[in-house]
Length: 237
Image 1 (cartoon, rainbow, N blue to C red):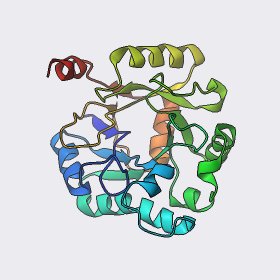
Image 2: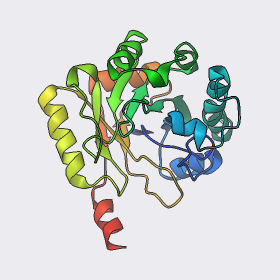
Image 3: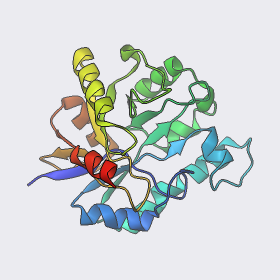
């Protein structure tokens, strides 16, 4: 028996670009046979300027309260049928086209890093790693992104399932990750009902918590889930 874990997805509560509810997100992943899901809603200045946030723009704790709503609502919707883990997709103020996926950390990390969005990537890397988390560059090699020094990263998302992330970008990311010996991840990057579930990892044992997720990614003992044929399908429509 194998177990599937999504590593990159969004819902409509927190991510300004999200168009799917936590309830529907849970049902879709259960229908697709997944046993675990890491919610990686965006955390950036756009999250609090253009999304559903209506609190004090200078109150970081209020922003964290808002950000954690997706995780809490997903837990309620899952009702124990799907393991829900907290992840982050961070976009720093100074690198506005570059996103970093963070795995293995929780609400406490956000609360103790009140200047998080103002960090340089060097500072972000040190903060994440010292807290026991993993820093992975999301959908690398897309237009306008900043190429991050490999020594600042734990891994690269070598498969991103969105139709806007063309296959050759995934191929470059795979070559880059292999060359520098980095952790490889895969994610559907699901934002809406219309998007495909195609990414994540497959393991022989279930991943039920952040500690198990980090250990699994570090070990390399997993299979990357991907479906490149979906790109061709989306281009034909």
